[in-house]
Length: 288
Image 1: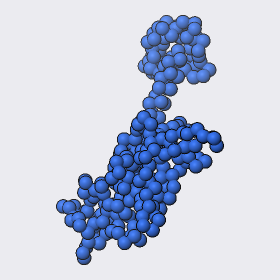
Image 2: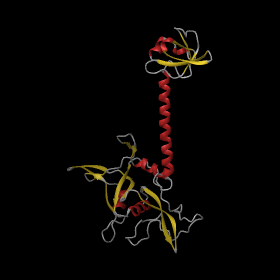
Image 3: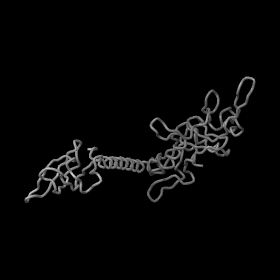
Image 4: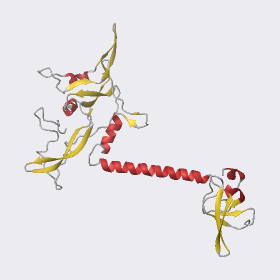
């Protein structure tokens, strides 16, 4: 089940206590697999919803473990970090976990049942909610529960997924997906950020390349095309385009003549494109 607390005010051991763990060959103390906390698959079940339970400070894991023992699925968003902790006379890098959202536990519970009465509609909680309200001998919540988020006294389930104004995925399900991917792990996050930046840069480069292809596709003449003037002293001679035609429909052409390179600037309307005959029509030339 993992460590229960991340503080010592209750007299319990701190979260992911390292006194019983031995350093590995790298001189580090990682969390054992059977103690590591992870994010579950967040899905709704018929007649149930994920509710947000507010706990006392440092009571998140205590509440989640108690509900899990009662057969209730829970989720505490958790971040993983490393800290040098002393073990005997030596200090070792120690892997630790702590709640990402302090004071909140998410639990899959039955939806409130509506009852119609003389005073209007009331809501009754299913029996599965009983562990949340259990009290100890001093009248305190056994699971460190303060209250459940809701509206007008009625617990309201959390949205599993929605999009914000910027089109980003938000909600409990994307949060759990990010945790499983390693976004809240101190050592995994840099590689994920680097890959995200690479994909973003690649997408921008692909978009620019696609835009350049669309721009050039509308041009009658590209740099490197073989063209032939239709009028004037250069008519009938093949030239090479030095550049794409500009917004004025002009293009610089060149040809080796008399032992030297001859340059000229001419309108695309006065040229025949030998490399791409399909752009020689009047409709194509009008795009220039």
